[in-house]
Image (tube, rainbow, N blue to C red; front, side, top):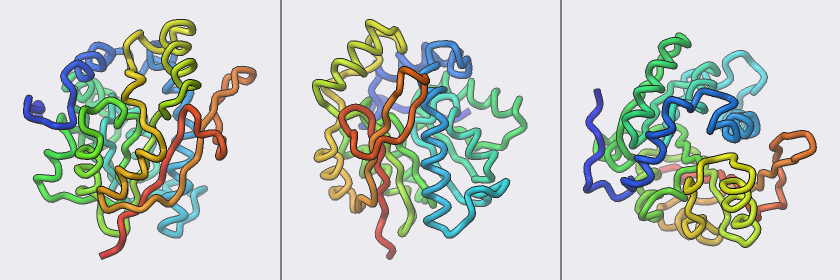
Length: 253
């Protein structure tokens, strides 16, 4: 069993860890508290697959388009992204600061016949090991950490030169306060109350600064929007008001 993160960790917030640990057993229930994330997953996976394949010159429509590509999923939860990427052939290392999430993820992966290196920890702990990956996933995590710049630097340190980092987060706007905080938590009850702190949402301009401060360059930024009519998430390149995703690159050595 991996060693649990210590109180000296600069990216893991104890209250956030406890909150998501309490949800661990429900991660894989598509109709439970993680229902919004299950619905969000297809658009995230398509963006990841298509852009990684374009970066390495592969056909995204093959059976294993990500075969042997080393990916680290930071803040993996119970593996909602890690498992389908592993099925695409990726060599997955997945870390989360909540031991309960990792325990659930390991059991589910075993039941699914998948080999995923799950670890309880934080990116700065992996950086100390000197391990680097072709792709770093930083999905819906940065808005939960105490020190975003240090967190981004830690994530960048485990990315190989020439590699890609994918970041998904929430913009700090009045629209996101109304929809992602008040609407999602208190009106629609999509996620438990208190899941997000709107003050920690990240503006694209702030994200750009975090990337530059970590030695990364932004390649692309696109919005992701929810359509209540068809109950579906889809890319919305010009709409960055609430959810958005960033692709960043580490310059080649």
